[in-house]
Image 1 (cartoon, rainbow, N blue to C red):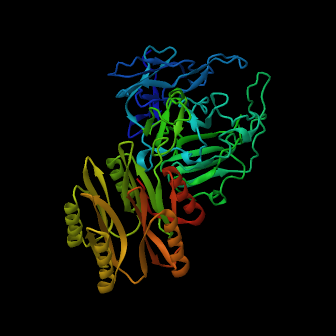
Image 2 (cartoon, rainbow, N blue to C red; image 1 turned 180 degrees about the vertical axis):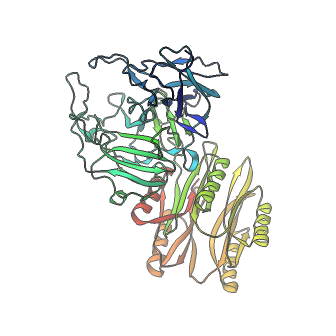
Image 3 (cartoon, rainbow, N blue to C red; image 1 turned 90 degrees about the vertical axis):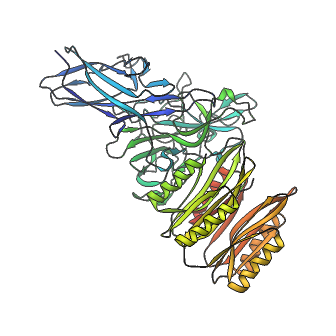
Length: 627
């Protein structure tokens, strides 16, 4: 007989294309890979029974050889009566029918290098001379969130010295024929044990049968993107660890229900991500309600050992919300490296930066931060009270920064209010804050101060947009300028002076004669001379600006202005003068709560900003790297 009348539907797919997960290389000079896992939904459209006996993947137009899947239909689950359907995924399979004997193989497809342009699936059935086939184009999976990839669900700032997160692209379980766990990750923490001279998931001298001795234990689990709570489960006790006679850690008996233990499922766009095995009682109470908004980086709970788990870790998996079809997990703003390339206590090495990549096939050290390990970027920020939504983001280059800013405007109506940049080992990174609002705005980068001034004036003349923010950076010996203007009906003025005395005099003159208050200050060196720039705008509030010789004096002054005059810090900038860093602040009157903070690295800064939002409902409105 010819080919069987079987309809073949494939997931994961988007817009008629099968999607794969591009995997990171294990080093900056290594080769990337492709992980291809497909869930086939087979429907017998014929009038008689068909028995599937083989499944093959091939790649038309590519030099990649065809791959025959092993262990297909060993249990008879793909014997299909007329009209019957079944699903099959190319994940783990036990080739030995004896339940007491394990012969596990992995049918997941891992290809080195670039992905083929197409995949062809052939399903061969008993008594048929030709296979049923389907051929689809291939495309890299893009998550339905900002940046088209997820943030890692942990933060680097919460690691101890010489610790890294660890996982791989290979998961031990299928999750059934639907394959929902094939793209999942079991995440742990490993650290360098200097006495034992090895990497270990346990604290030095730790007992592998004590939950609290695992490095991952109680680590804060954080949301991988903005979303809403879909479901949750809490209250399950953490497992007591045990081992068999061979020393292997054992799963709980009987198998707990739910197997994920304490879990939180968050809807991120069209996908549902489930965070599993949370420690009992660590989930914030406000998240235990369907539909509760979740922000990227928000605390979801802490790593525990609940459910069907042998030891403390965090399991994450993603499915499509509409039908639970498996979905890959690409990540961003993190770096990976194979452990053999590290020489602790140094964090130096050929790290590979994740930009929409999945975790490599082999287990790697993971540093989930937008900067490289061992490269601190001191930051200062201000958060304030408000009921508007906002987003804080860091991108590895200007094009991706521009795209994120535009996506936040197009998809969420958030306007850019801060844009700054810093160098990380010769590579320029970009930092932004966008917030909800109904005013018009525009931001731009100018190659010179004259061009910047003309653009600002044109935006005012032609669109009525007022300048609210300025920063600058030097690239290749040339200074460029960043500006943000927004709609409003208040007067404002840009001040540029060649020295501090002239700047101070002009700022005072604008206040005395026109009632314009200073809202923004920056300074830079040009031709060996320090120049000053400011923005003043109309308003009825009181304000004060000052320069402090060090951080301690600055902190004291900001607190005094709040305690004695009720003025809140709204702007801070710094500059280097010889070997000393000077601090510039602007405080103004108001009744809203605010908090300013300084952290020694970018990741700790992000955590503090998130904590202020989680605990105090304060939104980040100002950020400045201290290069």
